[in-house]
View 1 (cartoon, rainbow over the protein chains, first blue to last red):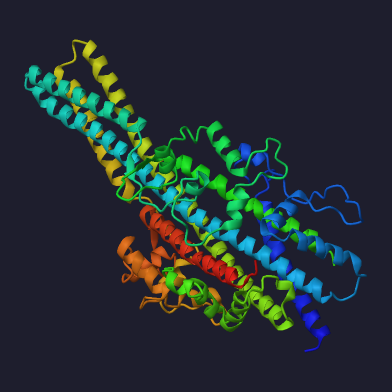
View 2 (view 1 turned 90 degrees about the horizontal axis):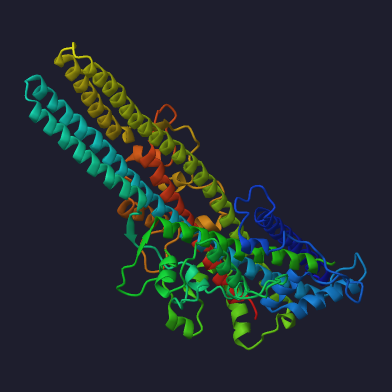
Length: 327
Length: 274
């Protein structure tokens, strides 16, 4: 194959790959837009600190190239390709329109695409893991709620039935002119009814518990509990979570912002090790920690928030791709 | 269903087991090995690679992305099935609870109405004792009957299956193969045998559901119900239990399909230059 043909085929391939990636990331970014009516969680403090969704090109830099957006700069830094991005933008600006890419440009584009894809795969992988953890949490919560409702239904039925049976039995006693026996039966029915109602009240106000049987969640990494190394190590996502967002006014990392939001929303009531490990479903060998409906509710909320925060990296990767799409 | 890591082999410089499997499925193992050899030789700047190596990198990326899109497509379909099942479950459980609440209210009301009648009769001293007691006994008897009804309610609520077959039908039907089976990397992943196993991932998943989720995989009617795939003239109904089980299995299937993401990620790690 001649050099020209090789460049043309790679160029077409890259365009197709970029187009598919961009459409996917656009969809993800649109879904994550806090302004979208479909977004049911508008009140999260951590979300408010995030930009809507690109593209807000900052002021022009010294030359004619528009400056990289803060998000693109962060993504490029996390991926370790900021100098390459700058170089590619310079090369793209330098050659006239319609001219084929140079070998250097092509190599830079393939490399940047490679790294962006790596970042995107990481986001997908972690988001998939969180999906699994969410399904476990929803499953556990549904099970406990159903167990409580079932018990309440049985208690109600038992209250009615004992009252009915003892009441029916008391009838003949009254008819047979034995009011003492009849009254005693009704008194017994009332007492049992009162006891069962009291139990129902207690059951309705307390949550059943179960042993934590799910895998350790990503919250263990958010809380920095030193859990065992995961099967697939998401280095870029970890760095992203521990970084301060480019537009942060309070200089807090994403993890710190999340934790603060959870404390404000009373999802994170205590930061002692046991509470954090329960929330993260992280237990030591031989330990039997328990979870209840409220704890599972908090875990679900935290997992959703963490997933949303991680998916913000997709938006930054899109900004980066757009910023390098200069040819 | 992920194969265990072989740390010793990795220390010897071999490819991770999951990445190797993905490379085999994507049919890019020679290119991956070539790129890894270059990396191991100490070249860290990919810009200095020769054109054939750049082509190899490019083709690897292309295949990985294609497989990733297949995962996204399958996950999108499962998400749709999950949304459908969750809506149905919510509908059925709401109806059941509303009915139980209504019966309990009726029970209170009949007790209250008959109690008022009985006690008001008691204030009229010319009414003989038996009619009052009969009223009370009627109230107690009705209360017992209504309470019994609430115990029978849970098995009553069901709905005729009219939704199209869900993604579980593709896994539970041993004869199923998608129209793009020969092209689909994800399908090859699901029908391949992980290292150290005699069964394909699809079979492992099915047996796992049989052993741990209580799914009767040999009962064709149960399988058709859970897959929402009745035969043309069959009138199947689905209840809360079936829909709940369907949701659990769909979540499980999604989790296992997304395992391919992890394999692709490791494969990408193997060919990327840092």
